[in-house]
Image 1 (spheres, helix red, strand yellow):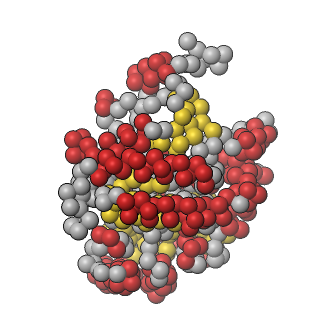
Image 2 (cartoon, protein in one colour):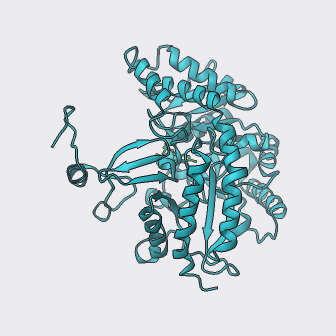
Length: 453
Ligand SMILES: Cc1ncc(COP(=O)(O)O)c(C=O)c1O
């Protein structure tokens, strides 16, 4: 059965065509069974059997404004008859205004925007800018990070998604960022972790040669690899190191930016201005693909008389930019950044603290804004993770059972390794968030069942 637009109309047909013809990201194609989704609105989506799920993963942590926001859809519909596309060589009203708005939100003198189609192209181009600006080659990138799946972005990535792309592009030197709960530096406090993580960077710079290093890239608050909120002083410390050695500081805000941390950019929480910011996801909640690099004056000037050797057919796509303009204005009008901050301080933070008190399998709770993680363990004393690092198949059973318990009850969780993240759309109502947390609370009984401590 198809509708007037020629699209399949029921669960069976959507599923059958998906299985026959769609090749999915990051997956063994025969081992997956993607759930067909019939509709999505606000913080919920619904399958073809009418079952509704509260989306505690915001899609891929990108739908910061929720699904089908009426004003955002109207803005896209209004703009589409004017320009569905125009070459990036022209100036365009939507692109100009999107760049102005984004530059206005960015800290420091980050005043120019190079638009891309998503996050990977943003980090890829940020690396290229840093290398050309400094005339240096090496880039320091963190373990427990994700920067995208194109050649350079995946080379900078510090998680198993990189393994299949190795050896990859040369020149990436990896470092450990702060993670007090599983410290690479055997620290016993957040302050000590901060000092030691900064000293570790200095040690690496000494042995790699500061004059060889173009950039240090970091996720301001690490996303998929664990919502690792840096200790106070860490980002300022990295800034100082970059200044001392003439290194470009790249803040990857693809996941942390646009309200997720209860600030426009995660880095605003610590009042630090990097040299380059990469963004995507929440800039327009993915209604039309968009990302970009926000560039400081100093770096932009490098390319005043010398061409920047990079570009994309869809750089500054007008429909995508029009949706970013609308989304940013909606964020402002509806106070979405402030709402996300309050969700963190008044709703999610306190509720997760209670949940941690009740469930022995919750080893640590951390986060801010609408960006939280519960680290699940078998033993609080040893901190043995509920499932091993990068577990799959039978090894991942406890996490799969936990996720199934959430889904059964109408909650779509975000799980990664031994963690579940609480990352609903930034404008989810406090009541809906509380309802989701109650389901999470019930489902954690499953994780407790594996507790051995
Ligand atoms: C921090 C970070 N950087 C970059 C990316 C890559 O973005 P995209 O998937 O749009 O290429 C992601 C995606 O999850 C991300 O979380």
